[in-house]
Length: 111
Image (cartoon, rainbow, N blue to C red):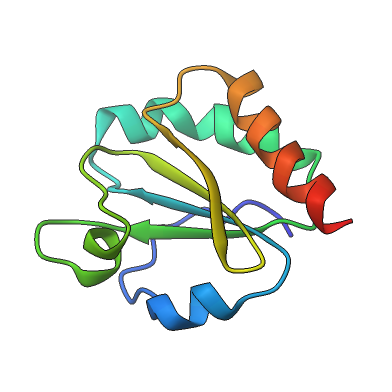
């Protein structure tokens, strides 16, 4: 799957994400967030080697239920799931290597 470019305003339901099989990366952020914009090339570079990872890019904000269910406090927050279970997360990543390592962990576990 290619990287999702735009933030989805309509978020999936938590129960649907928890029921997904295979590797999933959920990216919480906002299009106006400077940290989020700075992370985009890092995320894109890391995702290129993991086409089987489902990438959800979710617009987050105060009181939005999906972000609160994952206890997101800072943007971007990347949540790496496999088989509906959170395996790890990165908050405000500044290193493509850390993202690639987290993706490898969930992608390898599924394959």
